[in-house]
Length: 379
Image (tube, rainbow, N blue to C red; front, side, top):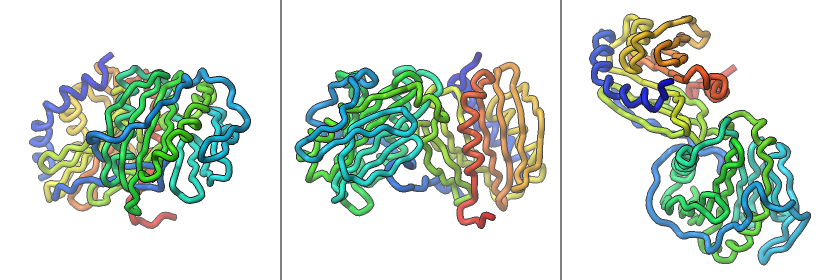
């Protein structure tokens, strides 16, 4: 089976050919896409990594998933702790008594009464065990799609810890201008990736770091419970060029953008590099006469699907058209939605190997469920 990683390697070679073909069929402006920040810290948009940051003075000593049962209560220098079990059953931990809690399906976010400290503990079902390289891709994507969107983000290297987790420390600013020191730990237990994030006002970091590490060390996990959640269920809202569209995509997927002539290509790739979702916005300032032919030529030339087989082409209620297609020689299947906005043509495409379709279809389905035009009225 050809992997999507291999497919994407030769696909870029055909880009110039595709541009010429699309220009012939078409008979604007290049606006950089933005991601919409949502309330911290369970929802996050995109940016890039940078260099050095302060590191925690010591690391968790318990091995994730192998720690002893969480005690009922304990006391640190800064706060009392009490046992907490997440409703999913995916993890248990000691949390500060009296702190405000915001509980989600895949996470818990707690804030100190004075808003100086915040803790987020979360888990993501990856659907399968990731390799070390794939886990690294997941972590880098979360860092880029969330933490790097804050002003003055500066991060250290990903560092393997004695307990097997991956730690990364960073500094950044909140929207209020408050400098923050943040340290995070990521690890995989079965097919579930766990994440611990500790946010502290920088001027209070030394006072709190030891007590926060007590929280980190107290966490125990149950990956069998975590694996019951939908794959890659922690998402953010991505807004495309010119506010043409928005949809929800996983934080752990790599985001890239390319802006060849008359095109903006936004791509979201799974950590295993086996499936991707891509939106192509094409606008040369003229209207397209035959959208169906335009879409098929895009799939044939840009994605290199010489044996493209279209199983269905169905008009949608929102004015778009859905193409269900496959490529037998590459053992791939996919869906493409195409539509116009003025002279711009939008192509939203999901490409996946046949044997991974059922694993990743929840990501695609949720993206389609959340697809919207920013500012448009909804019933």
